[in-house]
Length: 302
Image (cartoon, rainbow, N blue to C red; front, side, top):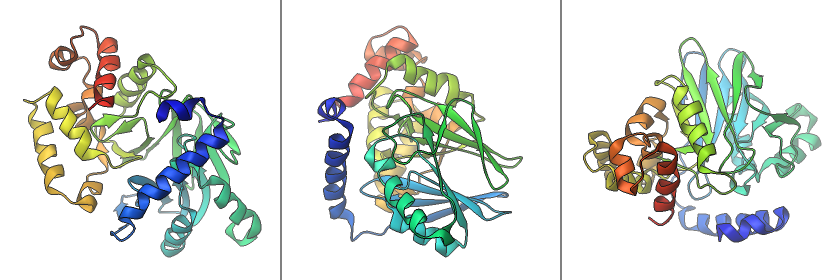
């Protein structure tokens, strides 16, 4: 299915993807969709479940009450959460063009155009014509502001060619929104890129962030990712402990495992541990780059 979507025209692939996620979401419509809030010294992050297993994130500058939304695939929920929080939502941070992340951009844009009281909306994302209503293309180390919060863009092509992660650092706290590049104990499929690009994204760029950086990823995939990790590193105590938590948790409990941290990912995410001998041995490779390629292939079949 994924191979077919990559060769179809963008509008057709987006339509098929939208239909798929809409149908698969029906089965959990009756479940709790609790918005989980992390209040920090200078910012607040509201984690908003969407579709079957996606996350949207409302990022608020506590001092100015200015806000941005990461990947607003469900605009109705986004606007309601922003209204309830009493914040001014003026920016969209798009991680990549896939419908379950950028599919709400056009609708949200139309609402702002139709209602001047909402203010001016700016839509950020990688320089990619497949991102609807993109007003502010960004690349590596470009910056933007959410009130008094400074956001640095980290270019992480592989899952898609224009994938962007967004990093915010204050004197007290650090957060990164990783879309479909880095998940809790996993990484995204190499749809449009190479093992070298994912290596650069995970090992060169994201691993260089401070260990206490909170990681807000695009999907709740914890249980499956940790099960795979435990087959790769069965003696890794950190993986075993996290897997136990994931096995015991219901859907909301697994959602609550996000955010992770960069430090936790270095200990438990086998895709960030491709330099470890035990990980290389699992796939029968001797270099980190070869291991990255073989490990993703193994996970794709898991």
